[in-house]
Amino acid sequence: MAARCNTPSVNLLSLLLLLSGALLVAAAGNSAKDACDKAPDPQFCVAFLAGIPESRTVDARGLAELGIRAAAKIGAAEGTAARTQLNLVTVKGPQWQCMDSCVADVEEAVSHLDVDRGKGGVTAMDDAKFNDARDYVESAEKDGLTWNCDLCRDGLTAPVKTGLLPKGNEFEKIMGAITALIKRAGGSAAPAPAPSPS
Image (cartoon, rainbow, N blue to C red; front, side, top):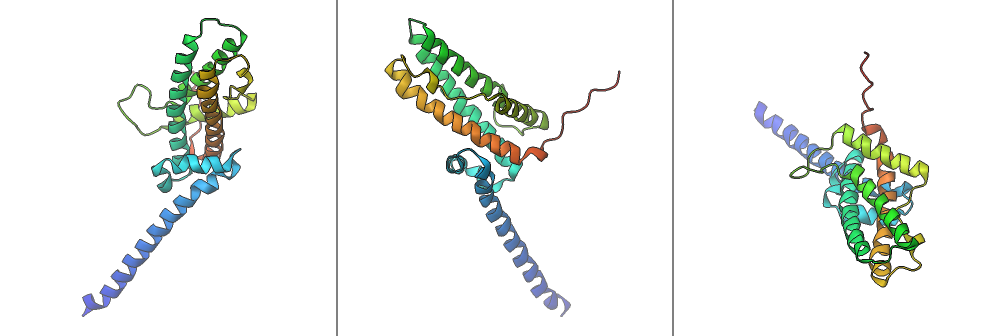
């Protein structure tokens, strides 16, 4: 008889656990929209995160980490494509130098964002890697660094104008999105350890 009385309690507890789990998943799904509210282009940011299936089930730190990894991958592809196109240019005038400088900025961003560099796959992002990405993004924002090569448009060949400049504009939006995501998760990263006393 005692077991029979506990069955409704167990069923009720199971139901409550299922409902709370569903609410947590729903809340995580909404976090992408909330996280993108402060992005320069909130609609782009939401679409960017929607293209990352895992973004529906992670917290603010997880969204920032996913954004960092995606930005590194997209930036690496853009940098490689840009270098290929730039290497085809035989006359290296001012516009080429402008694009070269812009592409170098993208490559530098990737060097700070590619937290999985040299590894066989995706690994957990430790606080040091997160802090490096956060510090780079904050410094770039403070310095007014952009990853948009539109200033270099005049005098460029058609493949560069039609192929690379739109990708640069997309990368600029992605960097704006991850800046917002990192700021939202800002308290999630542990501060860099203090130097040990000598």
